[in-house]
Image (cartoon, rainbow, N blue to C red; front, side):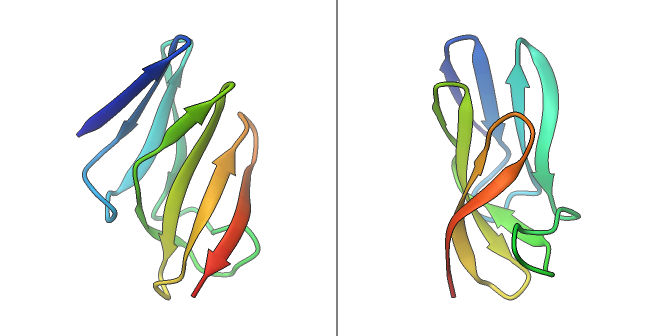
Amino acid sequence: MSKAIRAGICVICLGSLYAHATEASINFAFQRIADHNTVAPGKTTTFKGFGEPSLDNGKVAFIGVDTLSDHGIYFYDGNTITAEGDHG
C-alpha cells in the first residue's frame, strides 16, 4: 500500500497497477474515486487496474487500465473523472 499526503489530502492506492480501487481521503473522509465497476471516461469498458495516484491543487491524477488493457491518464476533480489520453 502506498500513500501520498499533501495539503490535508491523503490518497491511498491499494497494491500496484492492478489494484482493486483508488480512494482518496479529502478532509479525512474517505471517498472512492474509481473501482472495477467504474466505466472509464469515453469508453464502454470498466477499469481493471490503477497506477500510483498523484496530487496537485486538490486534484487527483492516476493511470487506469480498462478491461481491454487500454491504459490512460485520468483526473478526478472532486466530482468527475476525465481522461487526459488513452493509449491502446
